[in-house]
Length: 190
Image 1 (tube, rainbow, N blue to C red):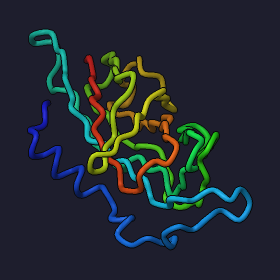
Image 2 (cartoon, one colour):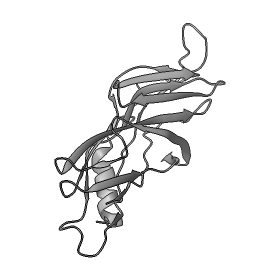
Image 3 (spheres, rainbow, N blue to C red):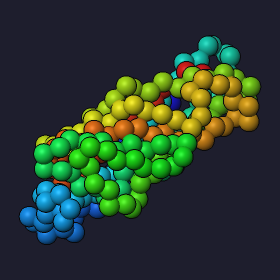
Image 4 (tube, helix red, strand yellow):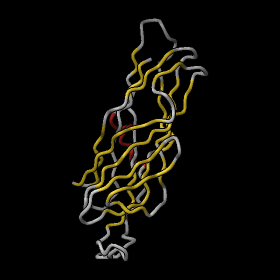
């Protein structure tokens, strides 16, 4: 199954909350502890899947399917003016970790949730990219080091697996505020 570009754009737009419409931190606000200027915004990642299914002739009765249940979100963070950092979402523990020059203001963080479906008893392999670029206007960040709570190689025991996907977002020093989004190509060999 391959989605058309319009379907992907519709799904991404539907999954992105309008989180940075108003500044919740007045312009020029400085962190009381570090004295650094803070840029506060919600970074929300909407992920759409492009499924490429490889099937031997007459081997299976139906193609594999991918259904996105919830987009990946990183909550509200602030970037330090001079120090880069990162945000990691762990799909196993369902936790968010920040490091370097990233300040966590909580809210809305979660791994990507998706289902894959196929014929019971058939093997599958899921392939993910090494990284993707997320954009907000002319600004960008890299999301990579993807991890899942389920092995990427297996057998459809009940015909379906629910998978949670996490990753690490690289945040530049003085990263521009905005709602960042992007696509991850998920390939299912079945």
